[in-house]
Length: 378
Image (cartoon, rainbow, N blue to C red; front, side):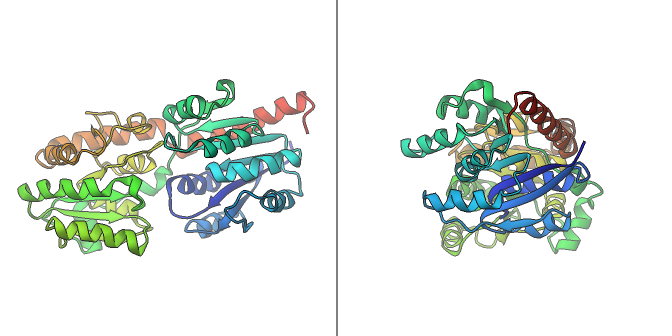
């Protein structure tokens, strides 16, 4: 069979869960069978170099964020080779990429959803439903996102497939032990260290985590919190003000986006993230791969990644006291942390290995192409 041409469309390759997923996917795709390209709507972003280093070209279309005809025209022009598959990631990429692919008569058009946006206004849902009509099928990263697509966006149930996110487990193999990692990173050997990885956007709920740290700090005064993730100056200043107000300014470190997340996790005792919404929670899977027990919000896709009471402790969202209780439970019990971390690692190895997820997606490309060819679609 000749090479299958696949074009991925995404907002950008900036630091984020969907972007990390796409980066890992294209780096594991069989490039002898699939000729692959990434089109970014707005800009290149954090993962672009890693994608290109794997032999996958990255191009920026340069659309603006308004709904206007030239955006579809610009993407339509980039699809002049008439690829076999257009695979869009995130909603805005679907809004522009799917109609353009349909106009180019691309036989397989996949929308890949990563979030459950129940808060969306009616106009935004209408735009999304209109774009979805041009998709051959929709991948949802979790059952929770599939439910939102069907009930919240009215996608046809028979067009939705759950394809869970995966992570590159190789990034988490042969990590240094806790003390070795701390020495390399300049972190104290005798302090409990909590790590939170995720953009500092409001929906990640960092305010509740900082409030929870007040109770944690009262019992473990040497405890440190590492906040890892992209932000902007205004948002970071807001969170720094909260940290000072809770007396934690010296105990909270804002590290920004980092490439050494596996090593930072290896140096930590507990992963914690108090999100208000989370379609999948890829960072929970990464923490599990590093052998960390987690404390997280019991929302949307998170319970599909973290088994409550086995690989971590899930708590209600917007509940700082529950976050503190979960963290304290783990910090008080070193043996329990180790057991939970081992269970979490085993679960992610069985369910979220990127190698297996990539094979599934490749098989779906080929099956859908075969179906479209049999139906005379082109």
